[in-house]
Image (cartoon, rainbow, N blue to C red):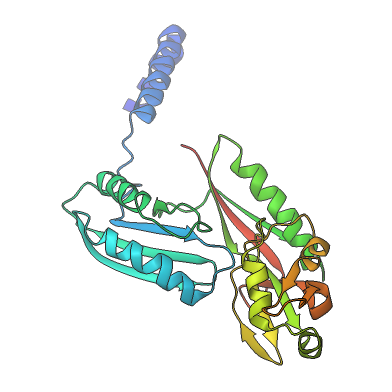
Length: 284
């Protein structure tokens, strides 16, 4: 009789010992599993911070001059910052900050947030947000698509993004393939001339309106593109069309609808895209 047969015979003849041995093995296995270290899945700290600022409706040139440049000048003076890079686009400024590897990233980010919060930026610009970079990836990917109806995609996307950001379990909602909503105002040169008005008068009317329109926009006149910062958010485009436009000469007056065609255009940032895609991260 071999030794393996003898071991089997031993446990067969002693069922209580066999059961106790199995229970002890199970407990030991659970304990070992719970005490496993996660060094095989490290969460490295990225020595980079991003300073993002929204200034809706502003052109890239305005963003660079009034937002990006002041922010870069301030963050360069923060201890621990070794390098900065920036990107200025319509309505948004992003400043990338490289942090010294010997410095505590969280502490430097806090100092960056304090520094940029003290800046005096245009009234229409939102407060700069300092973010870190999480290389662990997103927890969920969500796409929204409706055939040939970008307006509906934008509306549903706004509702979903707002709903997710209000949940305490969601840390971040980020658009991977965003859909931009743009206000396009095409001026009528003949109507402007008849009323003694100019394109600059239209720009002034939009810029001095009391409300605020959350739209990036372009003004086109005879094929020429003009950028204008709109600080109007009316409840509808029809209300925007009724904004008064005043000229320099007495009596030169018109509603915007009389001297321009006002429309909303929805455009994906990536050519050929037909859906908004969001990446969401949950609170740990």
